[in-house]
Amino acid sequence: MSNFIRGLMRLRRGPWEMVATILIAAGVVMLMQPLALVLFTYSFLVTLVGTVLFIIVSHFPE
Amino acid sequence: MHDDLAQRVAAATPPALARRLRGVSDRTIAWLFVTPTILLLLAVNIFPLNWTIRLSLTNFRTNRPNNPVEFVGIENYRKILTNPDTWASLQATAHFLIWTIVLQVLIGFALAYLINKKFRGNDLWTTLIVLPMMLSPAVVGNFWTFLYQPQIGLFNYFVAFLTGADPASFSMIGEVSLAPWAIIIVDTWMWTPFVMLICLAGLRSIPPSIYEAAECDRASKWRQFWTITLPMALPFLMLAVLFRGIENFKMFDLVVQLTGGGPGATTQLTSIDLKREAFEKWRTGFASAYAVILFVTVFGLASIYVKALNKVKDR
Image (cartoon, rainbow over all chains, first blue to last red; front, side, top):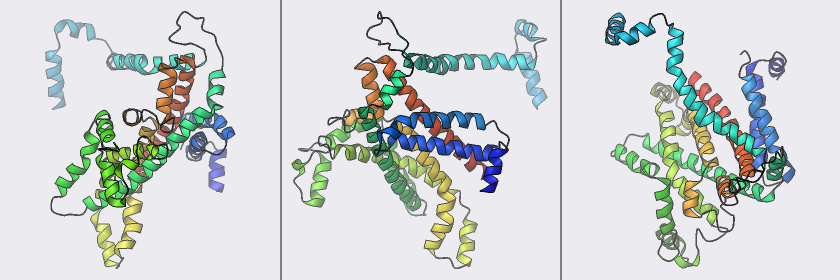
């Protein structure tokens, strides 16, 4: 866990890609869940942030 | 050998072209070769995407080209993301997506595991299993519509044979509770062979020496499956899930042929909903925003897929 946080602080690709992946996955789940309309409403925003973040952090050093 | 080839290419170059190319750097020549592809990509991919994003911020309607086009900001996005009907179609897509993936992975992996064993007629069985994947979705949709007919459909007779129910007592594509399962069954029938092939590639990439070592350690078949087969085939399974996930998120042709989105809107997947908004209701701006939302979602999933692919490559 501490390695993960250290990686985030040092702007390393691995942990940041993990964060972006979690955001994308969360966005997709929010988009398709049958529980709350409010989650559906914010799903696109979460997916968009995750996808843009993924594109940016894929240029970070390993 | 390379010098010989270079000399032959140089000799084959027409003198006029050779004169013109003399003095041009390798980098420039490389750009000359790449430029047509870049222009094609710009025309076919980037321009339509840019145009769609621009349209998604307007109230443009294709059937009223003379109406003034107004900039509406993110209003189309707000309407889509607060619309219960759109939410329902995404839930229908999720139901379809989850069940097709679960069934295809389970059956596909089981088939791959069986086909991986050496037995007589192995190649013939592989070819037979792979056949549905080679058919056109339009053809599959049409003949499954016949199979699902309550009066004459073989599927109903098969279910009746197993359960004792009257074949005409239920309609797979006409009943609200059964129609979502009808499209899941057909997609599973058609695309399980694809998952099987990916799993088979994964199973065949496991070196036999690992199993031999496990045999020496007296590991049971069950133990070998859970500690060798499954972990080593897992990246391939993951790939299959992502492939099918992205494909089924965009599923259109098969479902249109089978149910047309009905009964009601129970099988109206997002792609069908999008087509209706764009080409039946002619709300082009709204449909463009819808398409952008689906594009970002699929693009996000594709990013994860590329990452997973790189991990598999590194192994």
